[in-house]
Amino acid sequence: MSSSLSVYLLDVAATRALVGSGDDELLEVIRTRFQDDLAGDDDYFSHEIAQGAPTAYDALRAVVHGGPFSDHSHHAFQYGYAYMRLCALTGSFLPNDCFTPHRGDWLETVDRGLKDLRITAVSVSDFSYGVPPAPVPHADMPGCGVWTPEQIARALEEFEATKRAEHAPPLEPEVVEAVMQCLEWMRHAQARPGYGLIGFRS
Image (cartoon, rainbow, N blue to C red; front, top):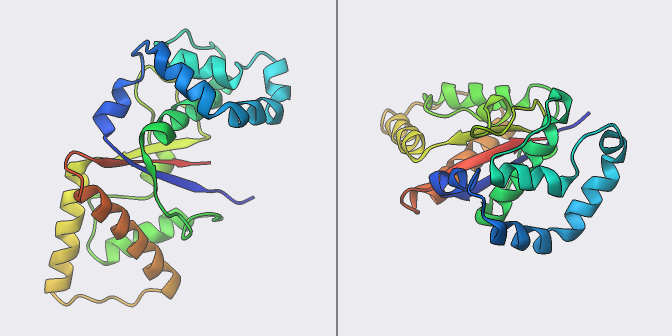
């Protein structure tokens, strides 16, 4: 089974502040803009919804209002996708062709490539194993993680130091391509003061 990685360029603090904001106007904008997407998800997850999971819109409303959330952990995925929709609305989707689709331990493989280049401030695996902002329940799928502006600045400094040292480890071409895509993400963020990245693995 293959996975995908969706990465958004946005103001991380402002996006997190939407969680629990109680902003009904925002909910209406999302319901209008993502109407077909919400309906499609409800159809795809109809079995889970029949078993008590919230609909896509009900999950979104819970995230924006800070609850109430289902007590059942196997319903948490709906809240993760709801938070992803908030990021899709407020952020810019970044190219992800090096990561979608991917299989197995590809994210860990790219992380090893970053470390071989002495870039340790960020990890693409963080987009799989991080957690959404409280009080959104944690779900294994979609995974969610953040690269803060500070992490991104350090990672780009590390890459510049690697170049100055003329450190060029042998990497597989596809790993080099993926690392370069990560660096492009970070350069986009660096060009927008205060912006970072929020990524989702699904």
